[in-house]
Image (cartoon, rainbow, N blue to C red; front, top):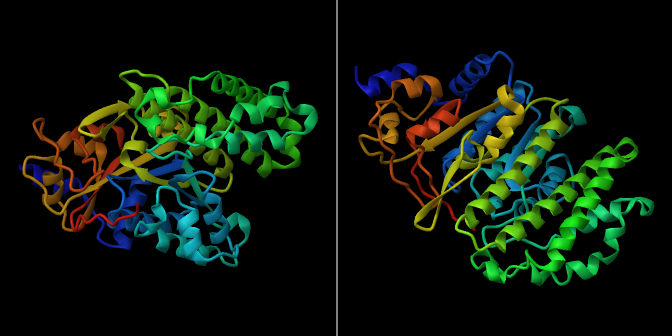
Length: 405
């Protein structure tokens, strides 16, 4: 029996919303306990087919009791989107421009998502609405911001009597924001402020503030749950940014891998906090790059080399275990024979879902991995199926990448 014939036997065609819903339901039913967090990945950003698939899956999951959507966008900026989709006054174009980091507001499918969420939530009680969250750190590939906003917000929230002594010199230690945002620091450790006396002192301040918030949690959180949780997010972001700046200042061979891993750790902390916040209302769907959500280390191309680093999904899986489910996706308009992409394309008319255990058992040992179709595309390798519960392959995408940056 050929590989394509075997794959046809295990795949589930998901050409329309009805067949997609049935396949997702079957996958969820295969678990002894339903996942608290269902993760859907995409192999690159900017190709229309993957966010549109996400939107279809979300609409189905909401009918099954899912009550929040989390995207690979800045944790704090996402509040503007959430305010809009839960009925707040704003212009949609402004929300798309300011509520998404990385330019993702221009990604096809995100406008449709925001419009659908606002329409769905209109007139519903808060417990039945579907809020919008981001779980990324306030970072860009070109560098990291000053910890000023995050640290100052956390300090200002604390009552004066609870503020640690170390915050008295906060403004002097922070200095000018341009000290932190020097673009040369991303690739030149000597240009980073992260190993300065000021930065090391600020790491102590950030630790003191986080500790003060933790000790005061019984009273502060009881009085203002949402405000307290938001402030804790600022405190952990300040700590994460200072770790990131310190790593930027290290002239080590694994410097970029360390930076990527620190970002993944910040994302995992944010996502776990959101799961804890939302789980009393229902499960959550998270959507991001496959490399961020898989249950294994990521091999991320940086320039002409691959950088191996931990993924957020790997860290999340340590906490959620069986309550975490990951669906990887890939697609290609032209798939080479002898590759995973070529085999999946032969077994797919438009879109198909393949349970990962059956997929792994069916693939020949010598099968290879296809080539990237656009910049930023990381084709799934046979080894990547180890970190997924299922793979959805889209054969009919045109593979065109819309500019979002």
